[in-house]
Picture 1: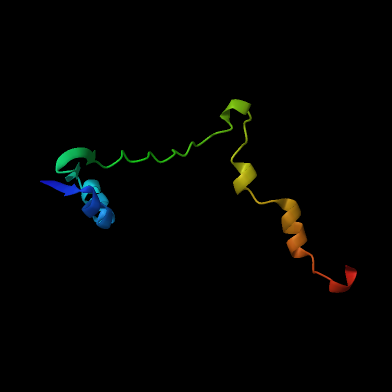
Picture 2: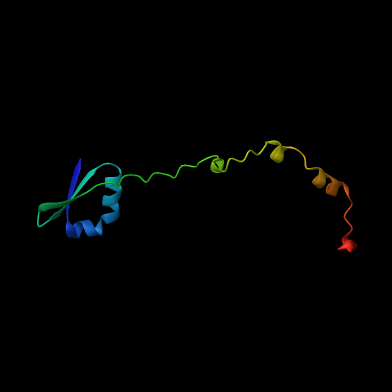
Length: 87
């Protein structure tokens, strides 16, 4: 389906015409009764892809244990009572 409208009328209904064009409808805006421009939906912007392993170029091998193994220093701190007066 094609919608044709003169410029003055298109000004009043611009948001509706944009919605129609985004939905895939052909929208033609005319000047003095003659087609002047065609309103079409823009190509959707591509979402930026998330890159995993962005530090691979550093050639650093970090073992999984760094993240998943318990930290003995932290465990020792947690077992120590906190003395508020020691600050």
